[in-house]
Length: 488
Image 1 (tube, one colour):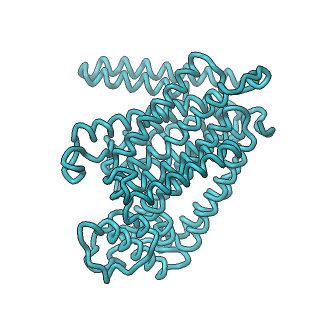
Image 2 (cartoon, one colour; image 1 turned 45 degrees about the vertical axis):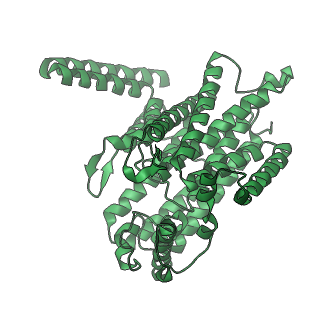
């Protein structure tokens, strides 16, 4: 019955596609007809293999903002369309196969639900309901992708999703490298009169670096998984590993390695300190959780690197890098910007602090439910400090931003969600077998990178919420793999 329903749906889709193609050839000019035919073929492929819609969503994270559709106060992007199509096709398939929506709700369902409820409550005081709906949509899409992957993915699908992620990251990094070396970008991003800060398709270096910093630890985890496999010659262990050697696996690992190198280089070329910290934290955690020996070695390496950075005054590291790190400690302090004289050297720091203070005052004025999710920018004028009139879209600290917009309820639910996510990821690492343990460790590195850069920026832009949802879903899928209940 299930196979009959699946084949029946496919034949109906083929029939509709043929009718659409014939109509396009008759009615439309040749260029428009070719575009329509291409769209029909793509739609048919997605109808047959709706996993392709997820791949489209992953690719659309860095590239989907190129073709936005204006919709009210925001834009409808390719990410939104791909996720909507994915969920619709998945639900239709469930109804066709099971005659009911037989959805399994993975462990993060409750934390997600509590956060969405707190965010919904915050909209009661929102100045702009449209902005609140726009922001809520990001989180609903994230949850939907998480549910889909947790319910449908096996080992092969996990690897395909990872391959798409690495391809998107590699191409995005290549764009950044080109921008840096060939000075392709705005003059405001000029470095040393020779280079341009890499920004990719994200318009700004910080979200560009943040996107790559989330993917790089995952690529590192894949490479480590193969390194561990190559170092273990016990045939009985090799026989039960999920990441098997072979041509496809070689290409997969090669893609991860190349993407990792490109992404690390592009993050460096972005000149984003937040991105550097995020990458360092994510990569360090990815290595640390592999074993006790890796933990001890990583701590020693981190200690040496910190020591070298602190000794930058005696030129153990390049002066330009040392200058970039100088004053970083000031970001971890709090001061009143109204008494600070602003100059070129401290402008970025003072600007961030001004927005942190505005967010803190929003929270103080609305401590329980906040000013409304997504409403930081529209409410900013009422809390802005003198000389800092531009809201910049967010508070440059996502934790403060969440507290300002959703109050104590939302901020607590947000932290609770991520505490649960880290706990579930740790459980997946402990339970996973073979190379999947290192892949799960890389996904933990992704979440650590996100948490680190969230202290300086907002990475839930440009569809990156969906990218995070993919990472959370992959952790749930790894946890569901055969034998995952037994530590490897």
